Amino acid sequence: MKNVEINVYGAEVLCPSCVNLPSAKETYEWLEAALSRKYEGQAFHITYIDIHQPQENQEKQEMADKILADEFFYPLVVIEGEVVGEGSPRLKKIYEVMEKHGYISVIS
Image (tube, rainbow, N blue to C red; front, top):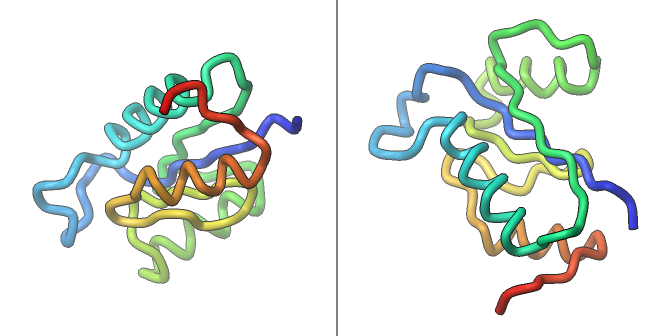
């Protein structure tokens, strides 16, 4: 199984429509913990990307630029290049995409 790449894009400042929601950094930490529990022992790579910091990777910079241009809300969750959640990402959708990539839940 391929080691799936998960990127969580965000910023230190909450987006205007994200009042009462966790910050992007908190979403990243929550998602990492949830995926580690559900897919224990199955490797994946999760990265937090601050949209206000320059990115060396062109694809990541383009995604950050789209968020800054209001094409997407943050936090934005991208798995293997596919946008799977924005603003308030849903675990159910993220789990579906992970399982599409061959991950198997170790909890019900």
